[in-house]
Image (cartoon, rainbow, N blue to C red; front, side):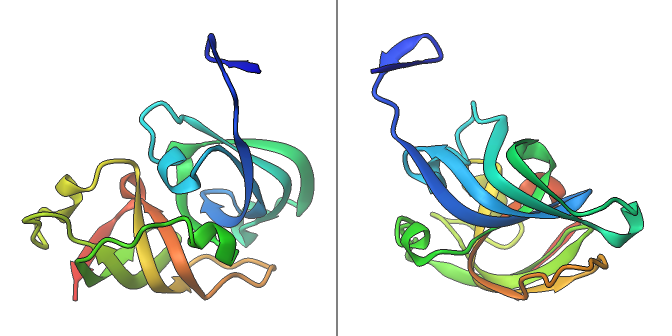
Length: 172
């Protein structure tokens, strides 16, 4: 039994291979979550994400070197988008019934794929229906706007885009 936030519980720590982008670097590693990763990243109390065995590949404009970091802690608010790269992690996601094609633009990428439109959502308000910081994008294409020396993912079956990082979006 472990203690988490002062409450004695059994902690179910899971590792999920991810690639993610923030303002400084493209990062690859093992996202550490408590339980289902798709629920964990969107919890209101998840302010920091822990990426173990992280490899960082800074954007060319930073002139920083690539590095390996055993334990990297990232503010979830600063992550622009995140790609779950393993099938076992993606299988834990329950696809909502009503998906619509959209194109999201962040300062680092244009991402195009299908996103959930919940309830009575329409293009002008669908983000109001999605609770949590990260909005899922399925069968997505990634068009990177930032140069990097590392080969970046160009597509992802399941990508989460940070709603706070959106510059604009278009319902297609």
